[in-house]
Image 1 (cartoon, helix red, strand yellow):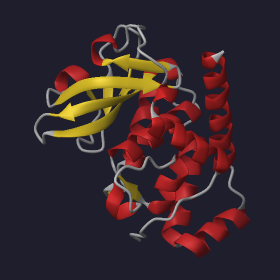
Image 2 (cartoon, one colour; image 1 turned 180 degrees about the vertical axis):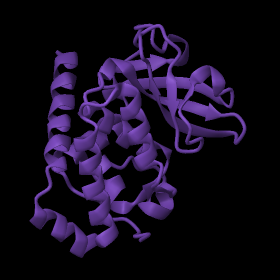
Image 3 (cartoon, one colour; image 1 turned 45 degrees about the vertical axis):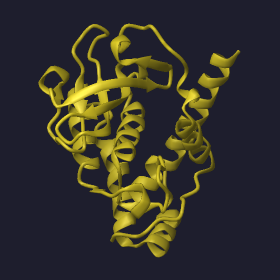
Length: 219
C-alpha cells in the first residue's frame, strides 16, 4: 500500500511539473513583473529546451539539460532562501536563477523525466566530494542497469563516467522508485523509499502546489 501511495504521489508531482511547463503568455508576463525579465526568459528557454529535445538521443538530452542548468548560479540555501537546507522545486530554481547542488540535481532529474528518460536510469546521488571535503549531490545516469553511470554535476560541468570521477565517493542514491545505499546502487536492493527523506517529501508538496518560495533575487 505504501509503495502504491508513493507511486501515485510521484505521478501527481510529475503532472504538476508538466502543467507548469505549459506556461501561458499571461503567466509569463506575471513572472516577469514579479521576479524580473531574466526569470521570464529562463522559463521560456526551459520550455524551448524541452520542445527541441523531445526526439533527441538520450545522450543529447543529458547534454542539453546539463548545459542549461549549469548556466545558473551557485547560491547557498542560507543566502538564497534564508534557510540552512532547502530543496527548491525546478520552477523555484529557474525563477530564482540559482541554488545549491541539490537544486541543480533535482531540476535535471525532473527535466530528464519529462524528456522521456526512464526513472530506472536516473539516481539522485549523495556523494562526498573528496577534494573539497564536503557533502555534495549529483545526478547519475545508467544507460543499462549494469553499466558505469554517467555523472551530471554542477561543479565539474563535463559529463563523465563515474569511474573517471575519483573525486567523488557515493553514499546513497534515490529516485521515484526507492532508496539505495552506495554499495547497492544499480543492484536493485533497496533500503527504503525516497519518501523516507523529509526534504524530498517537502519538495513534492511544493511541486503539487506550484508555489514559489521567498528568495533573495540575484538578477
